[in-house]
Length: 122
Ligand SMILES: [Zn+2]
Image (cartoon, rainbow, N blue to C red; front, top):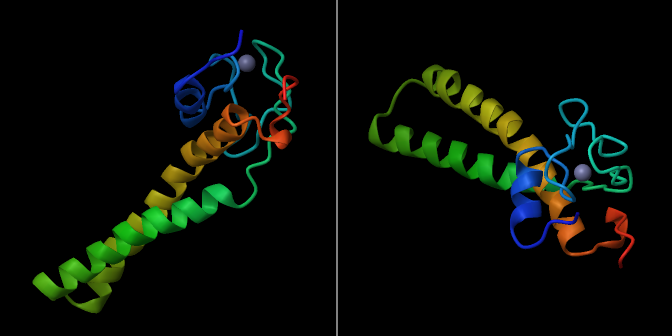
């Protein structure tokens, strides 16, 4: 069973196998399973490289930098308060986005038949 359309992307973002949508994609926080436990799909060949980190930097960096500038311009709080607010926000955003974006990029490799994704119908 191979998923089509947007289903691999949704499965990947939710941390599930892009091939069947049921098996777990990760064994650890960011460690990809060598093989899907449900369908046996070879996940070891999937390598998203630095891709997820780049998107995390763009998204989290934009939100945190915009928030910092907005509060600085509108409320002018002390500098330590800006750090207390926006450093944890940036850390939580980065850690929270990393896993879904890594799953999404692995699913994109699978859906676009990238040679690294290990599809045998390429
Ligand atoms: Zn699977």
